[in-house]
Image 1 (cartoon, rainbow over the protein chains, first blue to last red):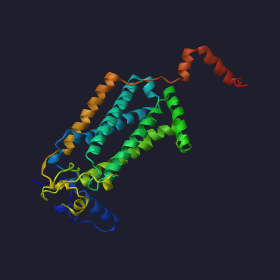
Image 2: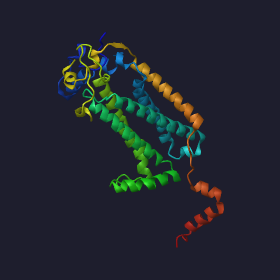
Image 3: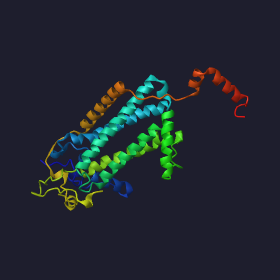
Length: 234
Length: 80
């Protein structure tokens, strides 16, 4: 049985979407053509996805939501709350451990996709947005260490400033400025990470999950999915 | 195989046999599982908490020193 759930071009009732003119109509036609509802929220998946490795992407997104929720509580209560309240310290612990889980699941997801060569089949942008999400998460975590409001964060900032000054960005990314680092940690970087994650997930839905290396196309007998060529390596 | 997939040499995922799949259910289960795992890990391992040095902690630890410094600040005799 073949289903419309993964990959492929828009078909069936969504091939020609009725929409008015102007920019809005154009955007709607293109959006629905690229991601029709049964492709955006599929109720089938390719049979080759029968492996636990495919679960780590959704686990990463779930962890990110727990990180944002617990971080939101900490932000509302203020940066000193967790030092003076038992509840605050527990919420801080929830934030810390959800970040640990986020990084753990994300790295397993990264390894899985690396060994699948998941950038094949015009998926380079999916791979790149995922990699940028990874590096943005590391930066966001590091700014979290800087807003602990204790000698730990002061010492870490003292070490980090030398490295950042040496590459010329210390003037506008000042790790010794608590207020600036707090804004990076609770506003700017989470906003960027949220946008990148949404873009990454939409790209995954748009291109579909990459078939395994060596998988043959059922509709094209004997044609195998080749190993990634150097040209396909991002 | 669509034109784009033929060009890249990688088969179109839509060409493969499929099986039932509930994306929303999987996401919900993942979210609940991660939330419960976070609660368990936070309960067992907590988090490091190096206390900050604050005016409150200074005044409690050495009230006389805090008072003397504060008075010196108020009469503008400190730092001179």
